[in-house]
Length: 161
Image 1 (tube, one colour):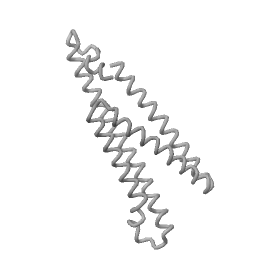
Image 2 (cartoon, rainbow, N blue to C red):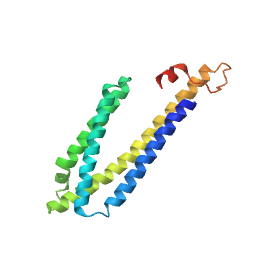
Image 3 (tube, rainbow, N blue to C red):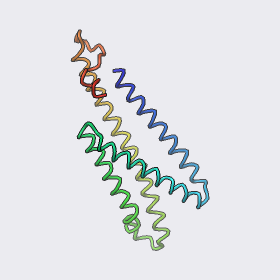
Image 4 (cartoon, rainbow, N blue to C red):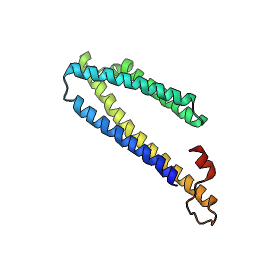
């Protein structure tokens, strides 16, 4: 399973890198002045557009129709969530009379939900990885010349990677 473990190792390193970037950026932004925060928002918007473009490209060049559909679902979710944030979120906070306060409260709730969703996404990714490891182990056991599960990559799995 060395190739498979290598793929997950790379993904874990990327996840850790992105989390550290997120954590540092958020901590830093909380200490910035208002104009700098707005500049940071513009930077994030540019990064988001690049990320969205890359996701769309991955759909086009995807070898697996199922993975393409998952990427499409991800894009749909992000688009809908963004629409709620920009157009509907403050309307849901109608019990707060002051519009500026209502918007601040709505944005805070949205940000908290986004972090909660990220945790759910990590748990979903872990479950998926465990299922992939299980499937690879089944494949290794089946393909083992001795039938004892001696690690040997399943040829089909190796070709896909």
